[in-house]
Each structure stands twice: as structure tokens, then as C-alpha cells.
Length: 272
Ligand code: SF4
Image (cartoon, rainbow, N blue to C red; front, side, top):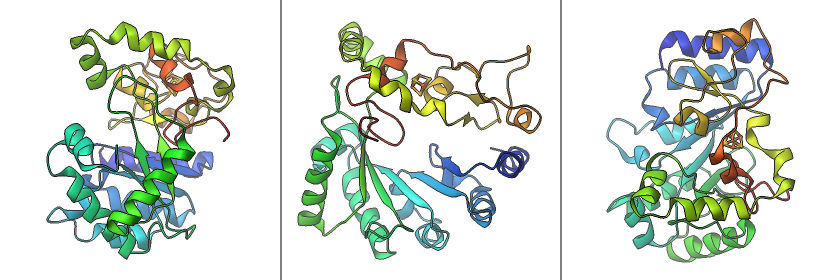
């Protein structure tokens, strides 16, 4: 993301009174403008979330990161698909689990995950195969117990996220001949009660060039936000025109958000 697009985002924060900035990647911390954007958002009292892959905290050249995040009271949301080493390394690659444990200890040492509201640390679970996540609250208790007992690690929230039948996971389903079966599972578990809390109703996703989408999944599928003219909607357009009340583009993958307890970047939707 260029300096120009970052400046437009800061302008939109001011113009629209944006209250939450949710940064994701790849590794958003590797963008040369990351610190500037976080500092400007925090100056404006915007809640900032860093979707951190954890291992970046241990990379040479990123020794500043944990302290920077704590100093600016950035919420850290980190993926840890299981509390068991074999499952994490199987999904993310050999050695990822041990590095993630070291990174979580580092965050704890900086005050994260101690129940202090200003330094929240949340973990993300997603299923390792074509099934729905288990109930979020019960799994959170399991994670807390296991990470505390094994490594003396604490964290605040566990978010369970349903695997979307797109991108790499979608390709694996197709390769294994499980795509139709998984779509049937999602459709059969559709729950009307999730519709009110879908994340696309309250957020807008901005890609690295500044183009807009209803959510990150639509971004991955190159389904841009509904355009009122022929131009692809861009973050600069938000300075001139409101998108409130605009129709959201949906497709079959949306069943991933509406199945069972529901799913969003903030975890289950049921009971929120
Ligand atoms: S995948 Fe569909 S339902 Fe889910 S957030 Fe995106 S647009 Fe909304």
C-alpha cells in the first residue's frame, strides 16, 4: 500500500469518523507506512487491530514491533489454529507452533493478554478440515487451560472462524473432491439469526491499491463494492460519497458466514 493510499485512509478516518481500523496482510507490519498509519489513527483515538502472524515478532529487523504495538495500545489478533503442535505445523508449516509460542510469550511480557482492556490479545481458530468450528466459548476455555498449563501463556479472547470455500482452502476441497459436500454442509447449517451481525454490514475492505470491497473474502474473489458508475469504487470516493445503505454483493461463499454459530473476522456471530 502506497503512501498516497495510506493518506487517503487517514483522510477518510477524519471525514467519516471511522472508529476501528483493522489491519491485515500478509504481514501488515512489513509495509513501510505501517507505523505512520497506526500513529495517526491512535492520535485520533481510533481503535487499531493488527492481524499479526506472530512469527514476524521474532524476525530480524522487527525487534521494535512488540513494544510499538503495546505503546500504541494496538489490539493484537493472531492466528493459532490449534493448541497442539502437530496440528499447527501441519497446517502452517514445520516450526510455526514453537515460534508462535515464543511470540505469545513476548506479547505477554509486554502486558498483552492479561485481561487489561487496553492491551487485548485475541487468538483465531479455524478448522483444520471441511467441518464447522466447535462452539467458541467452550473452545476458548480449552485453549486458555492448555496454553496456561503448557507454557504459562495467557490471552483474552478466542475467535472461531469458518473456513471459506475459496482461495487455497477452496482449491484443496476441489482437489480432494470435497467441494460439493462442504457447500452442502454450509447451506444445511444456514442460520437466519446470523444475518443481522454479518461483518459486511458494518465494515468496508480496502485493498493495497485503495479499491473497495464488502469484505476481505469478496476482495480475494475480486468482487468489488457495488459501483454507482462504471468506475471501480476507490477509497478516495468515500470522501465524496457515502456508501451507507448500498447493496452488498453476495455469492455462494457467503454461506460460510451464515452457517451454524456464524463467522466473521471477530469470530462467532451468535450471542454477540
Ligand atoms: S462473505 Fe458474504 S456474508 Fe460474509 S462478510 Fe463477505 S459479503 Fe458478507
